[in-house]
Structure formats: C-alpha cells, structure tokens
Amino acid sequence: MSKTTSSLYNLLIIIVFMVSASVNAIEVRDLYQVKILVKDQSSKTQWDAVSSGFKEVLVRKSGSQRILTTDEVKQASKKVKSYLQRYEYSVNEDKLSKYAFELRLDFEPRLVGELIQAAGMPIWGSNRPVTILWLAMEKDYKRKILRESQNEDDISHIIMTESQRRGLPVILPLMDLEDELNVSISDLWGRFSQPVVNASKRYAADSIIFGRVRKTGEVWSLNVNYLNQGEEQRISLQDKTPELLISKLSNQLAELLCLKYCVVEKAQSHQVVIQISNINNYSNFKLAEKYLESLSSIRKVEVEKIGATVVRFNVSLLGELQSVKEGIELGKKLIVESAFEPEQFKQVKSQATVSGETENSYQLEHSGTASDTGVVKNGSTTSVEAGRKVVDTAKDSTTFNNPDSLQQGNQMTHETGQVDNATDSNELSGDESSGALFYRWVE
Image (cartoon, rainbow, N blue to C red; front, side):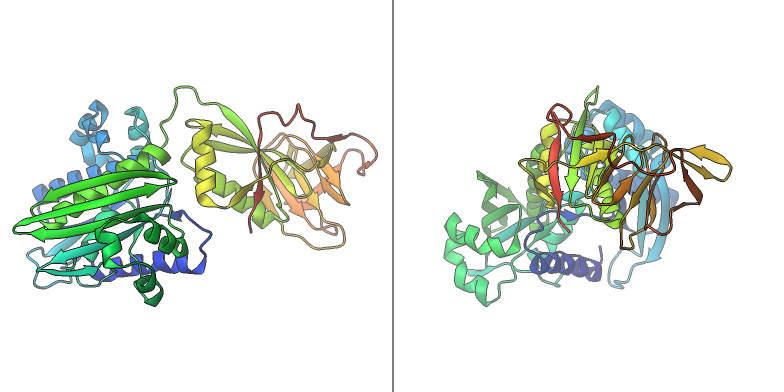
C-alpha cells in the first residue's frame, strides 16, 4: 500500500473519532481488495500474487487464519482465479523499488462468502471495533511514544500497514498536549492501565493495547496488555524484524477480536423480531433497514409492520442472538428501549395498480406536512395513529406519500374508499411482542 493511501486512511479514522466520540465501530472498506507489488506481468508472477491475495482476503473476511487449513479452501485454491472479479496493473510510483508494478485484485464478495460458510468458519462484517495502541518504543537507548508517521521505515507506519492487511481499524494517539499530560513513557513501560484507560476515553476505542516495544541486539520484542470491556490479557512477542513482530501482533489482535465479534452460521438459522422507534421519515426507515442488513450476524431483513414512528422487522439470523445484540451495541446506531410505548396499528386493505399489475402496498400519510416518498420491500400489517395512515401489504412494495399525493407509480385506490379510524385497531400486546428486541433509532 502506498504511503499516501495509508496516511489518508489513518487520518480518516482519527477524524471520525475526534468528531464523534459516541461512535465506536467503523466501517472497513475494500475488504475484498488487495494490492500487491510485483516485479513483472508474467503468468507465474500473476498466479502467485492472486493466490497470496486470495488467502489474505479469506483471512481478513473470516477473521481467522484457521480458514486456510480447511479442505474447502485448499480445494478452492487450485482454481483461485474463478474467485477473482477483476485485476489491474499500475506502475509503481516508487522508482527505487525493485517492484515495477502494483497489481490490484478485486475478489467476488458472494463467492468468498459462500466459501467461508461452506468451510464452517466465522464471517466478520464490515463494521469492526477500533483499537488504540499506546506503545513506548526503545531503540538505540532512546525512548518515545509512537504516534502516526508518514515515514515508511517507521514502526508506526508498519503498524498501520499490518492492521489494514487484517482489516483492523487501528489508531495511534495524537500525542498532543492533552495526551502528553495524561500518559507518560513510564506509564507505558510499566504497563499501568489506569492512566491509559482515562486517556483513551477521548478516542472512544473499543479495545486498548498498551505497553512497550524494544530492540535488544538483533531481536525485537513486544510486551503489552490487551483490554476489551473489562477483559485483560498479556501479550509477549519476539522476532527478528519490526515487520514480522507487528505482523504477529496484528494477527493475534484479529484473532482475539474475532472470538468476540465474528459469527459462525448455524445449520438452521432462527428468527427474531426487532422493533425500532423514532423512525420519523422514509430516509430513517431505509437507514435503519440497511444498518440491520449490514450486520454480519444477520442473514435477511424483512418488514413486518410500519407504524407512525415505529417499524417492526423480521430478522433471520446467521448465528446466535447474542451476536446480534453485540453487533448493535458496537455500532451505536440503536439504543435499547426497556419497554415499548404502545403504538396503534389499524388494518386497512388496499390495492395498487402498477404497470397493469395488481399488488398490495403500504402507504404512510402525514397529515398537514409533506413527507419523503420512496418504495420499501415486504410487509404484513397496517396502522393509523395521529392522522397518519399505514396500509397493509403482503407483496414487495411500500410507499411513503404526502397527504395530497397518494401515488405509487400510477394511482392508488382503496377498497373501502376511506380509512376507518374507529375500527380494526390493535395495540401491540405483550404476547405479540414476546421475544422481540426493542430499540430507538439514533439520528
């Protein structure tokens, strides 16, 4: 990875955390993309690069190096190019490098996911926890606290390169005046946790690694503590070069995080109802739906009910329910509600004619104000509250309209001709909501 790309990536992560300390996880992009420096464009060189990139993507997406030991992956490695979506050569910008080209490889997400599932290995979604590293380094009898650096020979740059290889959002402290007042080299050398924990609050990281790294003779050694939600673990590593040492650290960190956040698909998936309040417009609805779909522990999301400010989803799970809860807690987009405030659902039948076809549809109408317009998939019941109408459907369409324009492609007609607010009302009962998860959407 080029120095410019790495620096921009690191800067983006720090900006995200400095702007909003309430957002813990970050979406990791390009999980299926690898860039490899090569000497030439020969078939053998390309095959070796594709094989190496394929393994890197599998480990990055599954979260564990154990994926490479499975029979399914060993067989797939014989036809690795069938998993390749596209590739592209570019000239290496570093004129002093012995590698003349950079080969960009993009692998097919669907095929990679199916292979990982067939191997019975975990899948790690793109929303991943952020780790902050507080490291005091000793080299040539001089000590310093590591911070982000654009020097490619610096160990800080090696840390960022290796973390990106494993798909890990990792940040180093800014080491501005505030950090220097709160954390000293002695704190890190002695591995005193309290000053580090306090200083890490401003970064809102999910896990912390702190300690020391040093070069003694020809050997590099690392002694750190790993903290995550009250759990603490000591890590001691040694190797001949800083690259190999940090590679070991990144691998171990990824494996530790995967134990907590990766999801293994169960042979028979089960479902859970997730109900989200504070959905005041179509935009929030789509954001909430897409957010649930982005969670690695969720296989499929379908709309069950839409109310005035609440939406109920039927969610098919890939793994355990606890994985869903932890994923939602990590993302900080949904806040747990201890009890659901009753929302009345009115049942109204309707039909819509679109391009000559008849299908049921949802229709949300806001009285006195204009609202967003858009189409939503799936559904099963209806509601009316405070002058807003929701029309039930059984087929793949949901339309949000303003009160003066009831449109869905062409013209909407009601069998009854009007909505009867006095009939067919049902509050969500305790039995109906049994086993459901209740959350509030954070805008």
